[in-house]
Length: 216
Image 1 (cartoon, rainbow, N blue to C red):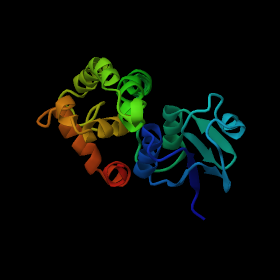
Image 2 (image 1 turned 45 degrees about the horizontal axis):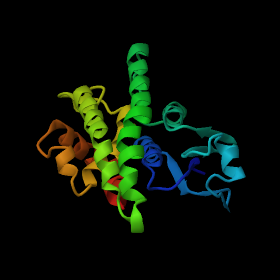
Image 3 (image 1 turned 180 degrees about the horizontal axis):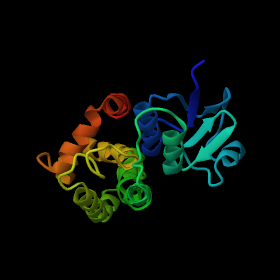
C-alpha cells in the first residue's frame, strides 16, 4: 500500500498550500482537511492544541509521527521521502535555504498575509466590508517585502538559483494570492522578474494542482 500523509488544515491556508506543494513536488500521496483519523478536529479545540501547542496550522500526520510548523514539515518530507531533492547538499547552501524559509515564514508572511491579505479574505469592517484604512496602513510593508523577495530573486529562475527549493514553496502561495488581488498588478508589475517568477511557479505541475487550479 502506498504510504500517505495527512495535512491537517484548510486548503485556503498559504502554509497548508506550501506543504501541499512539497508533497506534489516529491510525489508523496496525501490527504488534506480538518479531520484526523476520521474525526473532525475543531479549530483551537483541545484536540487541536494536542497537535500544535499554539493551535496553528498546518500539522503533518505521518503514521504515529506528528509534526508542526511549515518549514520543519517540508524539511522532514524532503529527507524522509524519495523524489527530487528540495534542499542543497552543501551545508552553507542548505543553511541559506533555512534562512530564507524563516524570513519568508515569519516576516514576509506577516506583511503579505497576516496584515494584508487577511483584510480581504476575512473583512472586519462595518457590514463585512474591507477596512481600506488598514489596507493602506499595511501596504508599505507589503511593498517592502516584495522588494526583498525580488532582490533575492534578481535574475535567477528561483530564489536560491536554478533549482527549486523549499524557500520557493514557502513563498509561492503568498505571491499567488497577492497576484490574484484585483489590484495585484499594482503590487507586482506584470513585466517584472517577480511576475515572471510567480507565473513560473504556477505553471509547474505542482502549481497547477495547488495554486491556480484551487484558487478561491
